[in-house]
Each structure stands twice: as C-alpha cells, then as structure tokens.
Amino acid sequence: MDRSALAVDVLPAARRLLGCVLEADTPDGTVAVRLVEVEAYRGRDDPASHCYRGRTPRNAVMFGPPGHLYVYFVYGMHFCANVSCLSDGEPGAVLLRAGELLTDPGVARERRPTARRDADLARGPARLAALLGLRREDDGTDVTDPASRVRLRAGAPVAPELVRTGPRVGVAAAAELPWRHWVDGSPAVSPYRAGTRRRRSA
Image (tube, rainbow, N blue to C red; front, side, top):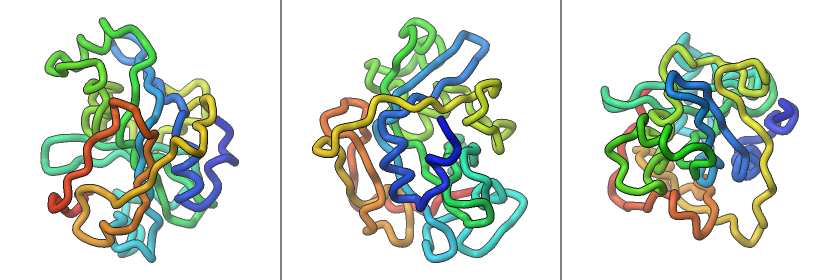
C-alpha cells in the first residue's frame, strides 16, 4: 500500500483500511487477512488515544511517519496492533480490530487452535494480532515496505453502502464517538457490547 494513502486524518484512513490485506510471515507460513473492522484514534484531542498526553518512547510510532505498526500490550495478556496515519509529527493511528482469513485455514488453525470457526480466527484485535504473530518487536514495522515481515496491501474497495460506523469498544473516554468502522455482513466483525468500557493499555 502506498504510504500517501495513510497520510490523512484518522477517519478517512480508517475507511481506506477496510478491505485492505494485512499479511505476515510466521514460523508456520504466510498468513493474510482482509481487514473488515478498524477503529480510529486521533491524538492530542482524543482522550482515548495513547498519545493524548504527549509523546513517550512507547507511543512514539503514533507520531509518524504514516504506514508503521504501533503494537502494544493490553490487560497484561494480549498484543494489539495499529497502523500510524496522518502526516509525520501528527499523532494518530487506526486500531486493527478484525479480519477475514485469505490464506490456508490449516496454517491459521495451527496458530489459533482454540478458534471454533474460521470467522473467529481474527475476530477481535487480540486474536488478529495472535494469528499474525504480532508482538512488541514488530512495533515500528513499515507495513508499506514489501520486504517487511508484516505487509499491508491495497485490497478491493469496499462499497460505500456496506461501510458502517459506530461507537468505539473498550475505552474509558470518548467511547461514544462513531470512529469504529466495519464491513456490514462480515461474520468476522466483533459484536458491540455497551458497558464494557476499559482504558486502553500501552
């Protein structure tokens, strides 16, 4: 994917990421998913964002340049991944919430043996990261570089009538903003549960 496509505000970046393909080379083989659910976090004016209080060594990737993975550990259990956007120096990223498997289900099942259905393999940000083997050492990876272990490829555009927006999930502040985007009808989209707001952990 061309970096310039992500050098925009978080909301159009989130919309552009729907339908894109995220692929990763893992010890079990290459795994690829079509992104069907994402969530935008802008920066200093967004109290739910990791960079709301300024730049730190941990959130530095969110400040650009665009097209890099921001990977963080949450609840002491899971990794989640974002893609940086906006222009270099402007903080913002899009959380990758869910994807539909495009590659060998056998390889995916080896990586996520507890998944009950194929639709559950990358349903939710922690499951998506686990399927692709994303960990702290992937923080800062340039996903626009074809030579990277993790790569983002432009996919077929999602028809506007299939794009839905709604409140964000799992945040303690500004959860009501309709900054979550998803593909209507995809079985991989995670269900929205009101009242489960937790603060995102870096």
